[in-house]
Figure 1 (cartoon, one colour):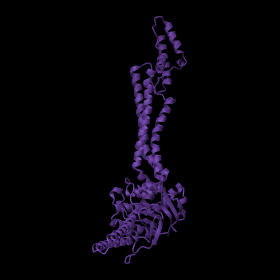
Figure 2 (figure 1 turned 60 degrees about the vertical axis):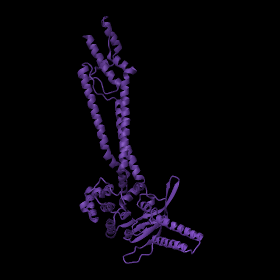
Figure 3 (figure 1 turned 90 degrees about the horizontal axis):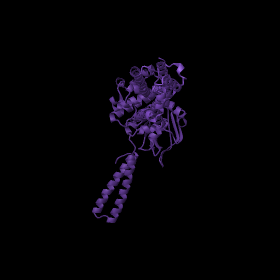
Figure 4 (figure 1 turned 30 degrees about the vertical axis):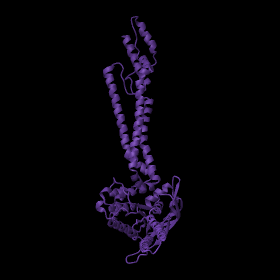
Length: 294
Length: 211
């Protein structure tokens, strides 16, 4: 197994307030697998990724990555782990603006102590992988968002880590660039055999993975294979909520008509209308909690 | 002739006394070792005894010693020393503030480097190389300019004011300690913010990402 997460708990303490971001989460990833992690904002996706990536500490539980227990690593071991086992791609802030694309890709190799000649040779390989050979002398400010993410992917692969963690890598990109970045991630997964765990809000992006894990309130609630072209999608929780809200709207309209026709008393009308509106408000709030604007 | 030689000897001994007393970078060019242990006050009496018409004997060593004991005369010198220490403190604080602000604006870069696998030591070394160059150059420039100014001052003094007493640069232990303190403070004011920035970036990089 590439990643095994067992009973993972993460509690953040802010002043007197405690927030439980992960509540006994369990998951596993096989070697060479590409998995999408989806879920509403605040569900614990990024927290999980940061703990697996050695950027944050767990409050309880065990995270094993390629046989190494990340939760028990010393600070020195974590530095080595970040150098050679895991590559990170974030939504933004992946690159140092004063360095060129090539220098940004070299950075992890500098940390590892790779010699200059080997670094340059590796940068050459990686810019070919992400299709940016003619842009390697440019600084991040001179690159498009999609190109920046591809440079970030190349930097994440610099020390040839077996695992790549991508936290909303397409979050700031338009559809066309998002598709390109996802294609490169898939290519890295297929051709280089890297295990990829990717957080995303975009259903189209999540479908590029072998599995989609849905995380909610700090635990994995579903683990499904993505729908491929031509298959009929089952109704999602969002769709069920939307459908129920539409039904309530129709019932409210019918209620108004019935009251005008004198089919019910004023008290009965108000009572039913109040009940329906209250139910509708709860459903809309639930949609908002899931990050959907209704 | 004897009187002139005696005066010369007195001036020589005064020069040595001045150097030893003041603890600053001034002194005489040549001193007769025989005059070091000489009883200058008694020597003054001897000069006075030579001729009853001698109205007075000015002994430079005595004048300098009295001047140094006179709070009104020694005051400016003390103020000058205090000024140097105050300027050192202010400039050190200024360096701390400037370097800290520079690192605050670069905290995300440091976080990226941490995430890409830089250890605390590697981060600190990178930042030290980037920043210490300027600090060391400034210190070297300050020392060079200070030396040139003192040397120039001595040359002017020796050429214009005195043909008997020759001032030269001397580094007594107290001056070396003061110099080391000043240099140390300036180096520390650059190193301390670097160590704090490294610690800040590497302790919990996740917060910097999400900012």
